[in-house]
Image (cartoon, rainbow over all chains, first blue to last red; front, side, top):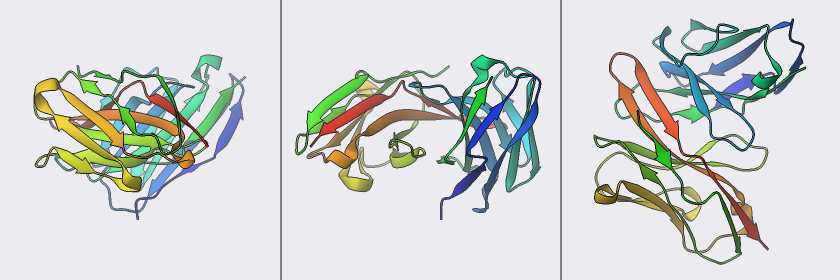
Length: 113
Length: 116
């Protein structure tokens, strides 16, 4: 089973709202990732968690705040977003091996008004 | 930093035609290479991957890819496409960041439209 689940599927929020995206995997993977995908563009890495610790932050603005409560869960807290942050947000997980394979969730389609 | 380039942004072909999508990467060290597919309205799925060994790798749904180290290429092929192969295809290269995890860099993607 290589399933990564994400909720919600769609989210519409105003620029003053606070919301959270959730990601879950039960494959025993020790690395989890957040990617942002704009329309007709490839996914771009935002954050990497390795063994529940933030290991890579690709210079993401602080209005995006990741959290890894445990090895199966990954959250992305959103606050004071801009309309240009509207995108598909993808979560992925991997075993944290060398070499490694990432498996992706279906994404959350975010619209910021 | 690694970069991945896919030569074709859009490909249109008829069913039963052969498909080849080009992918070149910039990294000169040990590479782990992937092709992912994104069907309309669906999530990214792994088509195939190359880590080491036989440079010709076979994936799901009849796809294969050839790793040519001297050309820094990892081209995707399918001998006979079906309408259901309509999708966006992404080549990606993985870089292991010491003590920090893995970083996947994607090419720009190729939109493939198969006409019935």
